[in-house]
Image (cartoon, protein in one colour):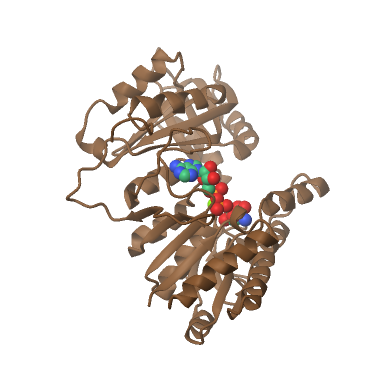
Length: 408
Ligand code: ADP
Ligand code: ASP
Ligand code: MG
């Protein structure tokens, strides 16, 4: 008998028929002798719809009320799935984050899970009841309901799995595993049977939305076996686990991309100590995350600084940077929010040269201009114009031999 935490995403519970199908799947797992705890997302695109409702009322809704609103989506799914399970003859109970509780720290909309209270869950499991837990939400330090970032139900599931010492955490979604890139953009993408934690951290961090970044961080830190599976049919899925030292790692495993990027370029600032800090400090003080940063080679005592932020933070970051740059006579600030980032990721990059050469060669042949570059041991990411993104990803997918038709 295994203890399994399963998480079903929005599409997987997007209708009454889907909720029935999920209930049947969970019930089958229970009948096979397993203990199962389930985490669910809000139905379909209901989180987006709740956000639209709020924006119709006010352009900049209060963060606390926004969390109170968004947390309702997941609660709808828990109650419905618990009902569907009950009706199919499988005892089940719904739980929200205030009831358990799932304690979080940090600002609304971006809270982080600190502790999962699992007494009630353990009681349910021991009594043969399936606990159905609302993903994406937590209890803040002041007792308010919080949310933990878009796509966060994956993280709720892993946190629960770790707290319950589950044998495995399964993320059931609308694809049958982690692919070499988003199969919706590149139909030639292929499923990866195994991905190392390290690679998955980079893929998720660079925008591959199949798994929430914090869920992979949690799983890696606690060595929790994580499996991505389809909720629409059987299949082996993708196992995310420690790298097997006996198997040679692929040079490039996958390509992630993210359209939600914006770049801010400050030109002609004095080439002296403290300038980068003076420009970036106000942005950091506003809790805006800066991703890629490039300082160009100085010329005539002047230097250019470029950096990227999330597109939602673009306007505010541009204003703040303009304010900070005003003290430098002759400096100019420009911004572009029609940019996108892509990243090629692979553990084998550590011991293989030529990955960057292939990247720049391929993009050069395609006539795609690279605006910024950043690297880690197992990743190269570049910023390109948004209009070039799809062409860039397809060309690189082919160039690295990742297409289905390629030998691997
Ligand atoms: P859920 O609602 O189940 O959490 P998401 O929409 O968050 O599902 O994540 C699944 C989606 O992630 C897929 O439909 C796919 O378009 C996208 N995706 C992006 N990159 C990848 C990848 N490398 N492998 C598989 N899916 C990916
Ligand atoms: N419902 C939330 C979202 O749409 C959380 C999740 O799906 O994981 O982002
Ligand atoms: Mg998701």
